[in-house]
Each structure stands twice: as structure tokens, then as C-alpha cells.
Image 1: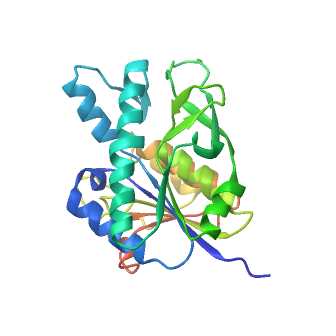
Image 2: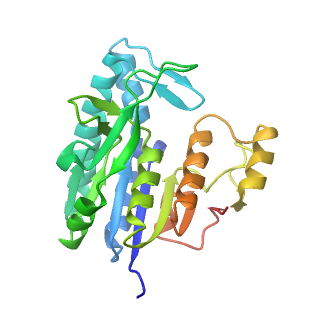
Length: 260
């Protein structure tokens, strides 16, 4: 039997910070008729708020170190302000959305990352996704909107990379659907030269990925993003793309496609 298509879109970067760009993306997202899930970040908003409060934000290889103070800001920003703004905007566009953390309905459990070479603080690595709950919401024509907050099942909230959450949800839903995963942000895709917006690398596989790493083309936040892309493909997600937030409106635009 042919499986129904499901879109999992992750929105982040400057698009979250730009009200006009975010509204445009959400308007396009709301018009998509097939089942869909939205995952959002918000790290820059959290960093700005932390700075205003005199709290230092530390990043290592594109990943945030989450102190107890930073965790409070992250939960307030991700699960509160940004999530509810997105949900309200989708409702305005006749898209019945429900904002969620991993703790809601116990939909996503994570384990606090163990200290090895780096102590990431209150950062969680996803250990399970309750795909039955998510599918139940989709069957009710409710669009789940996930922020980057999970929990450990023992009362502790955890900061979890939004790209990872999108990858894990896409993989979990692949048992029910033919899943397309899109990472949408302000650039057209993965750029060969960050200052040249037209230098989009249109196709990346494992071999070219390692070449790009060796040549320092891929760095910082793009490192975990691409790793999550390949993880999703290994876990039977049908297709994975990195694209500009306008891609949903115009799929002919140049973007990056990932394959194994």
C-alpha cells in the first residue's frame, strides 16, 4: 500500500528573528495540504535575551552550552514566546496548530548528555519519540509545532538541538509516512563561500561532505545540521533538503539536497 506523504519542516536562523520573513514562511506552510509537522529553533532570540540579562552564552562546534540560567531563558523563549507566536500565526492562516515541548503528552524523551571532553550542561540527546501520539494529532488534522525543549522523564527539562529534534521526529514518523524533511533558513542552501549567496552546493553525499569538511567549507552550526541530515537518511527518511524559507512557495529555487 502506498504510504501518505508527510512534510517535516524545521525553521530557524534569521527567519525566526524577522517578523515579515517568518509570517511569509508560516503563510506558505499553512497552505500545504498534506500532513505536516513544524519544528523551530530560536537560539538567537535566546542569546539576545541572555545578553540583556548579563548571562554569557557559550557555543562549541555550533552547539550551545546550557547552564541552569541559560536553560530558564531557553524554555521561556522557545516554549513560550516563539512557540506561541508561531501557533497564533498559523491559526490566523486557518492552520490548526498545537505547540509542544517533548514533555507534553510525554511525546519526546531525552537523556542528559554525559560529560566527556565537553560539559554541555542541561543538554538532552533524544532517546525516544512517541510517534503514536504525533500521528494521533495529525489524524485529528492538528499540526504539531515542536520547540527545542525535551525532558528526561524525571522532572528535568533539557535543551535539545532543533535540527536533531526535526531529524528524530522525521525518522520516527517514517514508519507511517513517506517523509520529506526540510531545513529552512535564510540562505538558499549550503554555501561554498559564505559571502557568495549564489554559491549553493546543490548536492551533498557522504563523500563530498567529508571533502567539504577537510576544506573547511562546513563549520560551526552547519556541522550538526548536516550530521542530522545524514542520520535522518540512515533512518529511512525519504528525502532531506536544506533550503531558503521561501522554498515552500517556489520549489524551483536552488537548494541543497542530501543523499547517502
